[in-house]
Image (cartoon, rainbow, N blue to C red; front, side, top):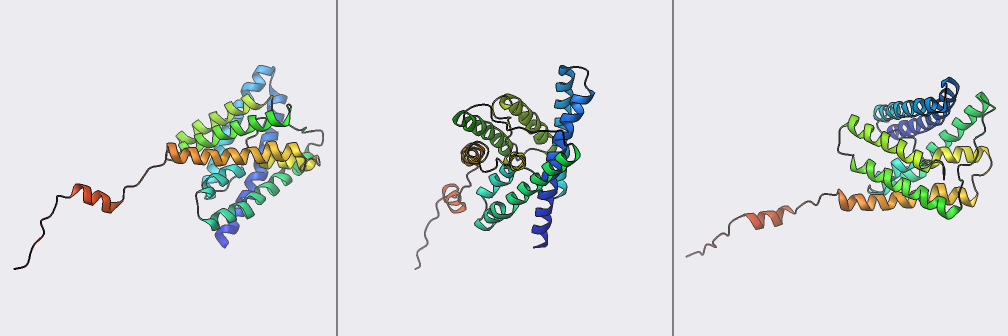
Length: 241
């Protein structure tokens, strides 16, 4: 129970810090860049560094995470108790951490207004967010066996690229928790567009990604008895006199 409590505390704290750090990056890149191009380059560099920092935090806390989809993907293939713990405790802890992160940002920088990301209709938004999540979850699961630096570097660039591709449509979020935090602050957390685009579509895309990775990257283990039977020479039966 103590280990589970520490993991929930890590999920809460990391989710809170994720929301705060992303807003600080936006403020810093807009305030200290001389032009729009310099601001975009600075924002991209800081975003990659931020992703590395949170990857190290996740490693240091033995799995603490800020994205419900990143903990849902492995939980789908785990035992039922692990799945229940993830859905019933870890994901709510991440959502609550994101809500408090938004409250902290809004109390510290009251002039910040985070409007809804969705700039298209619900069907297009759900398809866009679903495809983005499908891509990033597939990439992340495919890199699971690589060393820490390589998989963090590739996944960070992939997240940044996918975020840019989806920014003008849905915001390219690929993370329901901070979207829930801002929607809760704007009293839009139970709207149809929020639930379908930023929760239902990403969760369904995660399920599909886990299924695809099981086919593409899953290894089939040979049964020992079958291998032994196929490779061992036939033995002559001994008859007793």
